[in-house]
Length: 157
Image (tube, rainbow, N blue to C red; front, side, top):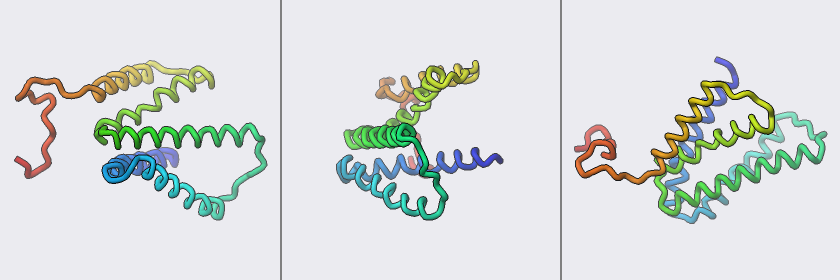
């Protein structure tokens, strides 16, 4: 297995668990306080990274600004996703919906980085758009329909 794939799969697992913990937190505290606690975890990780990884600090102000802008946008995205969860969004809807952000990345890579988009990626984009439409809709199936029946856990009747 490639290193990048292992890291991507670890991120997938961690972010999947994070979606549940974010919803559990915002069920009991404000999204703002949840975000502060979330951010504090990043602050606590920073000295560990600085102490254990050799970093090249000889960067241009533009690169530092670009990295900081990425952090700011990530933080604002996290804050607004916490707000969606606190304001009644279901974790099973909000998290998959906001996790479609790679569509924006893909468009930016095509427009700004001159990266090619393949037919396979185009089909994936189409599937993701359909997923957004399905996730964003409230159940409207007639009573007794299996389409919007909640899935039951083993042992539930």
